Length: 381
Image (cartoon, rainbow, N blue to C red; front, top):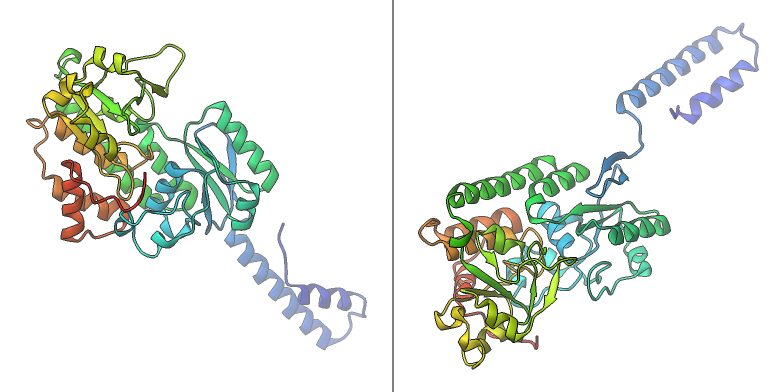
């Protein structure tokens, strides 16, 4: 609908009720109609004020407001995605950063409030929290299964706030960056980050294309302090191992594609050559555990600890943070094929994705962490 200035319309209505013989009235009418014409032309040139529509990864048409300045991240993966693309629009974190993570997040975003999570295990946010924050858009990044579609539709219906679902599968990373970049009017930055992912995936494909399946290292992801939680082949938590050229020893589990509870017997039977973990308690305990001592990876000292500052390099959460972890794992699995300078690559990644220029001390801390020497624990885990 086109609106014209109220003053001009009021004057014209009054004028129409009067006699048309006066020269003064004729001149006023000309001026008023000229003003109306200018106003209409300006509004027509500006275009309609309604929102743009995008189709999210679940195939849902979502109306995006013209003005998106406040975004609620539905879970940890989404918070990383929004922070990377448009940090000034992020309203808060699902979990406030720990002290050891804060130096790796740009100020003032490290001080954003803790809002809880709408999705995933241990959801702590609710409708009241969302309404109090009053976002212009809710973003979820991860699974787009029916459960999450239902949650998105329900939340959108109850709050009137547009809710976008974005596919969080690792190989869909470039598409996710381009999709949210389009929704937020950040196409240029979304494209730059998507190219980084495209080039990394292409490099892996080229350098690993002649490595047959049987020659790829057998790898196990050890989650939790006992190391007995892992993920089946294709799980969003373990797909990084497979993308880096490893063979997930958990294998495929019919009817399941996610986290699984292992037993020590199953781990011993699988006998992985490499173990990757982000749990420092497990990492420190595994070297002296007589059962784990029977596993090939422990015997050969090939248990690797992932940094988790500000976000995990392999998981925790499974989001864009995995890109630097993918570089690290590829170099770890195939040191002869990936000879890049990890320090230089880490510094460049944190600058491009996390908006921080790492000090030499902070960079060294990450590299030591990746070698099994994390910073001292200042809180229980």
